[in-house]
Image (cartoon, rainbow, N blue to C red; front, side, top):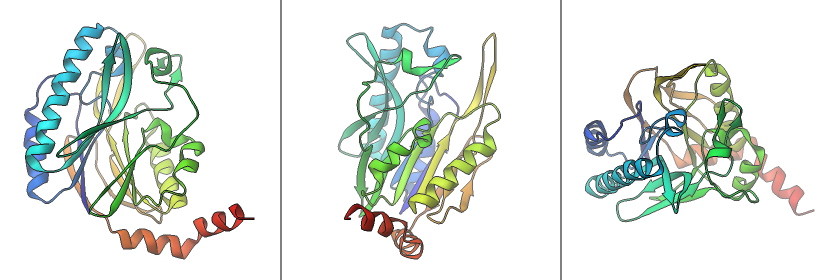
Length: 265
């Protein structure tokens, strides 16, 4: 399975870079392309200053563009985007397949005083469910947000799904570089699956902070090893993943077999 991360800053209404990079990825045989958070929309702090109508117009334009690109280049694009419905604003991750579009509504949102997405967005608060799961050519993917990577309950819901790769769009900033890398690698190891993480680049300044988004998009192996990663510049990373490597890691470590045996007692 060939997949790719497109590491970008917020793109505004321009689609030029998306067209160029997606065309390159398609020529290389990529089947799934992942974008980081707040690429198609302005960063959260800026989003708070915009009207619902402006946010809706922006997002509808981006949705139209991504649908066309997925269809034209016959690949699946995973991209976080903001949806406006009946005056409510939702934070979702869109799956733009060549012939269909589906959405995963983020279940757990940041709720810190300086960054309170939970208060701003109207995402439904209910019992945690399994995230969006899909297959391409027999290779099984799951989609979760970067923030949701912290929560064991999400992985409990994934534990029996036999996912080959978890796709994680993120918007990591400040001095969290090493912590995030450790988190991604440890989750990949305990789940014995690939994790492909896309983090945005660029920065946003307000009166209190300078939010520097440092990139470091990466691929973690089913054994918890760092296979590929990017720096802090705009870049396309194409990676190859193998279902056989996932199966080998699960056989070797046996974590799932142990849990399944206990569950049947």
